[in-house]
Image 1 (cartoon, rainbow, N blue to C red):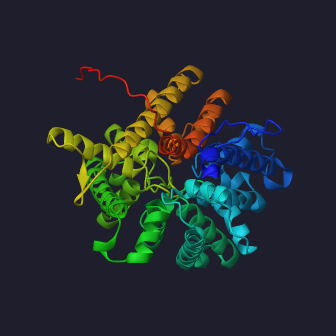
Image 2 (image 1 turned 120 degrees about the vertical axis):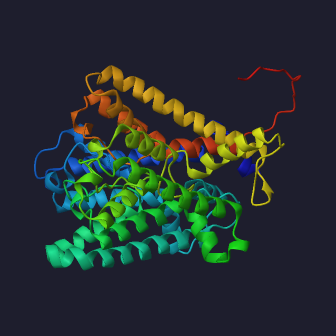
Image 3 (image 1 turned 180 degrees about the horizontal axis):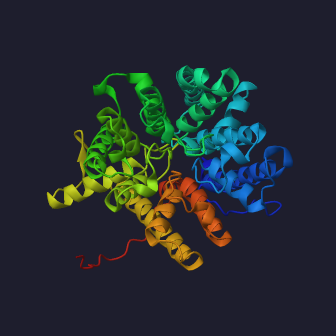
Length: 455
């Protein structure tokens, strides 16, 4: 209990030596920052690139890989050698599953029981709520990730090995499988997957990979243990249903908006290819980052829809970011409860606690503020760019999506720094907000009630 009390005080000094204790989110943020620096150093080395990379190019690419974003100021397929691409792939895997998961796995392989402090760190990385022994969950996460990526690699290899040859075909398949599962959006092809817009195998495999990766490891664990709908946790039901309906509705809207657009769906003659392209582009903003359509050619309405989807993101404790789909659903349920004049929002016969509502509001507000501040900074540093392009780039960085309207490499050095910082905060920020809300101590003093008029 005393150890837990120490963990809840992130800046408490040790009684001897004056060392400042860091909270789990602070350690995670520091770990991600160190990974970005190490990755940048490896990419900056001559053997990693086909041309000399500037330090800011290496740092931006490493940050984008660690935060599984996909935004890039270089052409990964042309500017990086096999070694450089391998570095990016490792950074994606470590960043997607979380470095604390790998640290916990290392300890478990050595046969050592995790102390409570380390269990708390991994719990924060995975989004696990219960304070139980998490070694089974960690094993499930690693096994599930590697098995899913292996299956995805084999399926993609069925297309790319005959086309690219055994070695290159397997490498392209492995790279895209890992990138898709971790919702990274990095591709070894210069135009992402535009050339595969009408390929059912590639479209189905890649979308399935990043949908599964975006469900969240807690949801996957619940599905693995219970399997029956009636026994699933409320969070699992919310994530599954919300994911399904968001994907279906977004696909239908994009079909309607882009059907006759010659730059996107209008340029495809086959109706089935149009359906595949609309489905892919509706699913990828949450938050995979691949594209089979030219993003810059989307209509303004479609661009706004994609931005909303990028801001929402996918499931909690997943490889994706954004404010998370559960946060979005809780906000909707809270609004519904208000209009129905009910005391608490409900779902599946269960009420949602006030603490969860406050957490959802705080996470969403923090996301909005981060997006607004970053966009404000970009309008100062890169005001010559289109405002819509800057807004799209900002939301993509916050949601660690990686979709771009083609201006990433044209941004100034301060603008790229702002995007890099936004990617890092977008990856760790919502988790940090949730941690501090979950561990805040109740105060003994309660003030008199006051009224503020709203609306």
